Image (cartoon, one colour):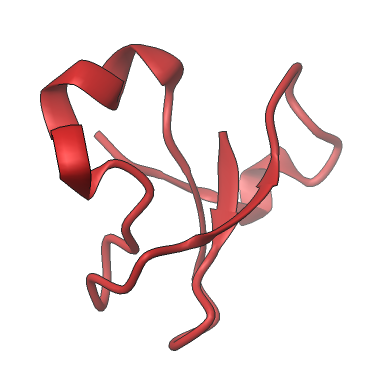
Length: 55
């Protein structure tokens, strides 16, 4: 799932299988902790390398 942060502008992505591991923190920005704005879910995008992968 692809997100961008409305506070600091970071682009990031979460794998769906991490939803259980992160719980309520799933979708939060890895840099500032703000809840990200959902953009897209599906196959890898052409600009995939622009998104930081959260692990």
